[in-house]
Image (tube, rainbow, N blue to C red; front, side, top):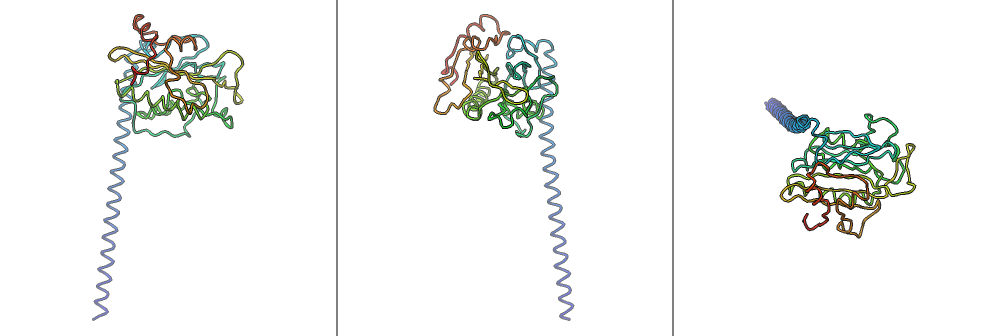
Length: 291
């Protein structure tokens, strides 16, 4: 009788363990479904945002060429419209002349994560051009002009910002230092004002330039960035930073008016603005106006 009782106990324990296993399996399956639903929901949000952005671009038609952020076209450039930015590419320098984008409060953050392995040669652009291999062992970062931090709202926007036509050779001390800090400032301003218009690119001084890689990508001596805000009283500000570490310096030391940056670069910024507004905002250079 005692042996039979033990057998009953064993059967009961086995049944209990099977029930617990089934319950855990059901719980894991439920969690997997919830995770899948969460990811699916995130993907739907990203896709909807991309569709809205594409529809907005389509609605603009030819007017998009005259968008506020886009400079006047010049020489030695191939202008390409991406989802989140416009780039003027220079095949002689293997660099963008400028990269321009309209940053809204809705686009300063998002679910898409940056992956440094995403650096990609731009197959849509013919040679000569810069490639990611040119940067190997060069001592220079592949420095984003339109930054990854401005493109977390869309998978496609994030992928396109890692194209090499959006890159310049940038020393790490600048790329991860003051330049990165200025990029964060721009996102703060976009949140604060609702949107800003940004143009940035390399500054090439007169004379011979250092190059890197098999394709002889030119190394800029400095970089510029100009920012326009049209909310309330329109205002603009410019920055020019040497391609070196800025540790120990303040950003206010590198503030310039847009007029100053135009003289340095030879680029005509914000030509779509009415002349009276353009003339007024481009002579300004007051950091206090930008908090």
